[in-house]
Amino acid sequence: MLQNTPSQSGSHIRAGTISKPQKGIALLMVLWVLTILTVMVFSFSYMARTEAYAALSFRQTIEKKFLAEAGMERGIAELFYMNTNKNKTPVRPGDEVWRTDGRPYKILTENGYYTIGITNEAGKVDINTTSELILRNLLLNLGLNLDDVDIIVDSVMDWKDSDDLHRLHGSESDYYMSLPNPYKAKNANFDTLEELLLVKGMTPEILYGAEGKEGIIDFLTVNSKVTKININAAPREVLLAIPGITPELADAIITIREAQDIQDIQGILGNNYPMASPYIDLTGTNAFTIESAGYKGTEKTGYTIRATVTPDVNNTFKYLYYKSPVDITR
Image 1 (cartoon, rainbow, N blue to C red):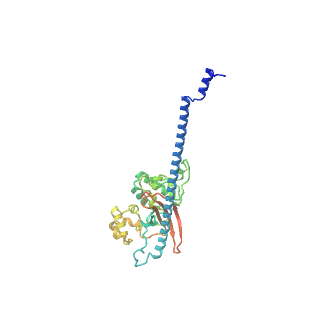
Image 2 (cartoon, rainbow, N blue to C red):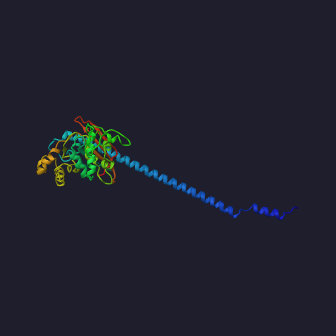
Image 3 (cartoon, rainbow, N blue to C red):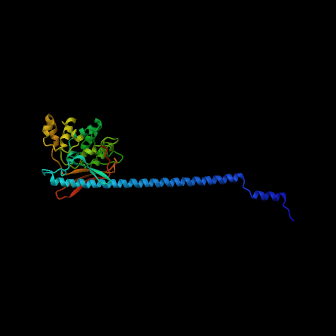
């Protein structure tokens, strides 16, 4: 009979056991695998939640956009109604023609609401026909310093005139051709308000507004084609840009037209009428800006669309401008 030698017995014992270092390595590997799996689970959960919130946000944005578009269509319908019934008397309650001074009208829906404001373009400052004084006053009233106002006003006038002569603070093609991305002065009327960004001194902050400050774009137009401002449609900021109209008179005008269109300008302005008369009128134009915002539930943040349209007697219309969405600072 064969017997195990001491060396053989020792080898048999080592083969049947696992040393402590090997157990530690195996435990670390298990912990690493669990950690990786945990990270993967949390990452997947985070991605799923993010995508769910993104989908919900997208859906709400689309719903608010549709509400804003519904408001735009309602605004156009009201313009047609106005053309048909603006001289109709008497008017039953609920059949009144909407006012075109920018006041908001709120329409409730099943799951939200939309607001609509309509402004006759004659209540704004047309940069192609306005006087330098009105444009200068408007910029000053919005808080710009005098040096910046001088540069912007003179450069606006130089941009649209037909010559290459400089105003005192203005600029012509020689200045614009010296810029890193050169271009020439247009020497013609503005086609859009955004074109103002090409003019020396104008910035996106001044045009669109920033940090709660109003932008000048809300008070300008290229579509009225008139030299005077219709005080029945002008916002307060535009009224204050008119010589002779003080803050008190501007507030009085707005208060009076809350009930009805103003007919007697001289009676309201009194002794200030001679100063204001060269710049004001009661005549509107056939171009209107509609600002429509859609809201879901009780949310205070909506989706806003701004468009300028020209309706006609045949219940057709043409878009002159359309922007979706648009930021509202006021």
